[in-house]
Length: 422
Image 1 (cartoon, rainbow, N blue to C red):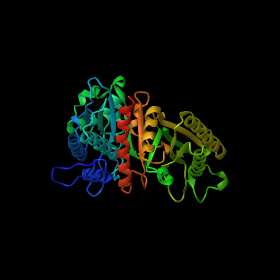
Image 2 (tube, rainbow, N blue to C red):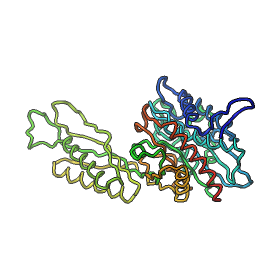
Image 3 (cartoon, rainbow, N blue to C red):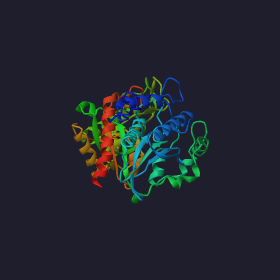
Image 4 (cartoon, rainbow, N blue to C red):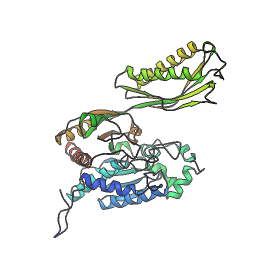
């Protein structure tokens, strides 16, 4: 497939990985911090990125391109018939601070590329395609997150409009300044009866595909998560005058508890992960036996039953260690998100097109959250991972152009296969 003007050399296919990477780099110029990729939701850089994505959508043949009430950019490629259902493709274009250029953005540009390939071939399908560049996935600027995809799923919480950023600007104020029709959130909802589902391409953000030597991966589901903190209260004292046998050291108790969290994470093999990412020592000093310590807890698994059981085991271990060491401890879980399994038929269809590209079919769960997870119980959803290096949420994240091109080809083939199977 190629693009060419009369008398000129053929232009690369929109599915060419190098073409998509060039757009990723162009989009990366839309940053709020020169020299790094920082594009928080509803900022001036986000607005420039939204305008650029809107241009590419129109160029690709998407019509009715508009900004919705949450700041997302949405374009529509009409079906070959009236009253057809819609398949939604997309991801997000907001980033964390000092991010890489692939997370989220790749899914949006790959979706646009697949539609552009359809347009070049003059193909209309028996379903409409909507490409969405969600405005708020990362949750960095405001406390609540995934508000754009939640609005599409019909589970938007109006209280999130009251969230304020570090400068005291509310989400409502930011949306109005952004130019979003914030009073029309209800219009964002998609009727599940009229929607075939949601499909998202995303870099893996982990090492599994790289270790397997596979460029693409079929996501089995998005892990559920339990997050909170453990607080330990002991007794502070002078490090020189308090005998070891008489201490109620909150930090050494926390250290043992943290190792217990790690051990519980190992106990279920590859099915569960348990992480302590922050540690706070109240009134810490080199010559003080710590009297109060707090650490974070993050437990994730594709099985909600497994995750809930692991949290219960961690609670029991914390209580046992606290009693043995003569300290008091509490476990507070403030964030619970259920697992979101990918839809079987969509997932298997994606596996077939990957196999059709003569590629190994690797299935893996997503430990990270994505816009796709909010459609759990609302509409079918599926994800395709692209092999990546150096993790994610940092400037070193990377996906090879060849792998990106394969992802675009797979998504394009997925659209054709969906039409074939209808």
